[in-house]
Length: 427
Image (cartoon, rainbow, N blue to C red):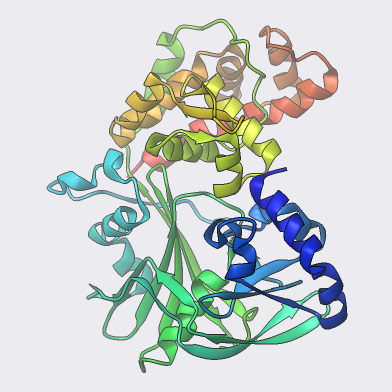
């Protein structure tokens, strides 16, 4: 069990939290009570449903702040899934004179927002000609009431001066847009992160307030604008619009075919053949490790992974040569860091970075041969064909038919990503 799992289990046992929730529908807990076992800031920040402690997940619970030092636990429907983008990203370019906005410098949410603004993404998405950055950082929520759906019906909550944080706000002639920015790709988000700031600022100004999520990774900006149909109902949010933008890389199919001809094959490493279908999430993990080494527990707690996914995606990074184990942490967990190749790749320009990743993929026979078949036939080969290629590729410890079939989805996922690099690189 992780640190949060153990500490929350102890709190639930000490205060009979499940019994109180069963009788009263909720449990109010103070920061002082939480601190008996672990720091509240580490015990209450669950940006994605997958990050919830085990006892929360098993009992369909979530936690929300109501003051600066008090929280409520109940079977809240606190999270919302991101919809899948339904269109190809629009190509954008970073202004040539902006030397500080090169891809290798886009290492934080704030810089990603500045880049989106400089590239004209925000004006295009928000439909405002003139945008001025205004309020940001930590501030008080003020006081407001709201209702939220639970497993047993709707509950009413009152918030009084809870702390909120706004990553950026851009004000135009017709509206104020409040941004929550993320650099981790995830399937869902905590609605509170946009709802509390919306309630705070809707009561302070007369202009419409637009809650917007920006998710940035590997040169792609995903923007989601939401609207709450009923301002006092937490779960009434609807997606107004979604659009993605990508830094144009000018990668052509000829570039990929040239790599197929010139990249040398390598012997398969003694690492589990990857079971991690999303290359975008592998790259996203590499981006986070570029900032600092992280333990397995850190990755599982801070990123939108469960423990099993952490194993799969760190193995995938190691398989490609970008990630390595850095030995055991003092608390007994394994620490992961970028290899010298990983750091070198992250320092490259956007086009060169994508080609470096493709190069590492094509050093492995199973991926190389699958891409050749795909380009020759004009479509992705079926599972049986991919499995036949895998069986000829001397993969490490892949033996059973079911394992071959499961792992074939990784090959398909990575080859689709390679082809998408060509599509997204065109202006």
